[in-house]
Amino acid sequence: MVHTQALAVAAAALLAALPVNAGLYGKSSKVIQLDGKSYDRLIAQSNYTSIVEFYAPWCGHCKNLQPAYEKAAANLQGLAKVAAIDCDEEMNKPFCGQMGVQGFPTLKIVKPGKTPGRPIVEPYEGPRTAKGIVDAVIDKIPNLVKRVDDKTLEAWLAESKETPKAILFSDKGKTSAMLKAIAIDFKGSINVAQIRNTDKEKASLELFGITKFPTLLLLPGGKEAEGIVYEGEMKKESMVKFLTQAAEPNQDPAPAKVKVKSKAKDAKKDSKKASKAKEEFEASSESQASAEGETGGPTATDETIVDEATESPQPEVESEKPVVLPAPPIPILSTEAELEAECLGPRTGTCILALIPSSPDEVAADAVGSLSEIAHKHKQHQRKLFPFYVLSEANPGFRKIKDALKLGTDIEVIAINGRRGWWKKLPSGEKVAAADVSEEAIENWVDTIRLGEGAKKKLPEGLVPEEPEEPVAEESEVPIVAEEATETTVTVEEVKAEETKVAEPHDEL
Image 1 (tube, rainbow, N blue to C red):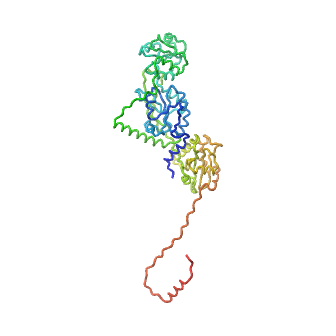
Image 2 (cartoon, one colour; image 1 turned 180 degrees about the vertical axis):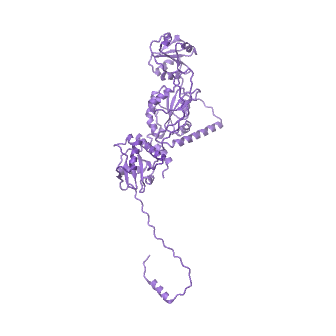
Image 3 (cartoon, rainbow, N blue to C red; image 1 turned 90 degrees about the vertical axis):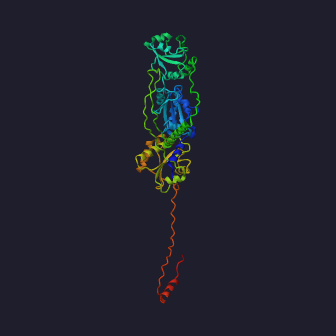
């Protein structure tokens, strides 16, 4: 008997090219590795905007997102944080549940709120591309850069006179993500402003002797007479180094804080909440394997930052959308007995088998994902369809079928009917490609089988075990029931006749 729920988890693990505990992002990756404990210090307490991916290593769509996410992390380096947390790790499950994760991958943008340590968290539901992710994150970077002109320059310089100040003179009106990030680096230690090169700002340009654009000017003591012009390239690392002569940038991640132990009552309450969140998360997680999930998150709230530039994008309030979970995975036939009972027996009907090698690739994950979607769709519409199964290399029947049907070493999808003795292979080239196992391609192939179209091949002798003959039941002896004795008169002639009958020969029993 196939236990679907238990095997779903095994199916998920089977599709992972890497060990489950290895995660998707290595130590050399620019994606920050998080866990439930480090999230608060690295993300929640940070002055930077972050995007966090909640994933499972076995998730096929998480693997598909990985290259774009890595590229986004490289492009956002120094501007924002790109992080990921493995929700398949036991220690992370309560936290993922508390964050409302119900499918993989789930992406959430986390930006600083008014109160330190209480960021605004909202779901990212844009394109799963590097450009889409980068644009969305940059749009959420807080703008601490003050827009200044001739009329407001004097008042701005007078604010916190002894505080160092930095001014970028630029031809552009919009504040760049790099200048926003620099202002965040020196939040509280250097006030940053931007002056645009227009006819309205001639007095400001003449005051500091600015003739080329862009130009970065540092006022270490807040006085214009001490202005130092930056002569290097307009790159963040060198610009930050230049500004450090006036003040050191903020530490990020923030130093670890000493936590005060909560009272027993509060600790017990928190423990119950974490336990409930973990249970809800596990229930959702087990319903997904190799398909991608989209999930809404906590509703975003507006954020107001003092002295925010006029062109700074304001966060839009996004309402929480219904959770869309992927189809539950098709079950695995983990033993040869299950294989014979479901697909390879003398009385079994048609079933579809995805033969997955011990080191599955993305094509294998796509195949299982497509089969899962098709099976789930038919089930939702209450349509009758023959069953789909995963047959892993760990099952002895895997090699038996591969050898008998002379199949290759890669992923294969076949239809097989033990009762009628035929089989059919999913069309493909010499090697199965991603296009061959798309949902559309497999569904079209399945339809031809349902309609009885196309040629079928005969199963080799001996692949399907012969049905054992039913034992012939031996005739049971009928018990002799003695009749009740009755008093009768017996004549001599009757006795002689009876003796004659007894003397007749008979067959031995």
